[in-house]
Image (cartoon, rainbow, N blue to C red):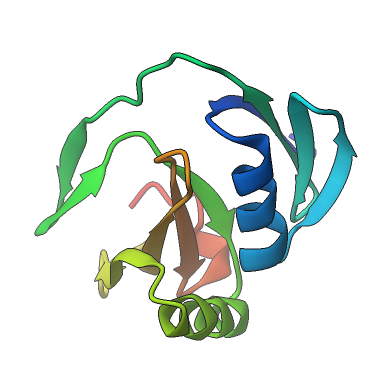
Length: 139
């Protein structure tokens, strides 16, 4: 299947805080916006946040190897150099909520990840595969 960008729409508590986090902290581009919604260009993917007054964030986790990870998260697959750069920048700002960790070491699909939490409680994973060709490896 041809690679296409994705669109994800999520509720948020504050448009101003969410925009500040994604644009100024993470460095993504602001797209179209209004007073109650924004589009973020997340590495060519459309991430839309809608102002919502009441919603509940799920609080579920799962075990992956020796780690307990948030079940509800989204993120970016990046090359190792970009992963290292983002890790340093976000760690310097004390924004890493989990990781960095390595998974499936010496197995197909080996990768490293770290997680940050946005102002709405969403968990964003930055993941880098040791071999990019193994991103969808069946093991």
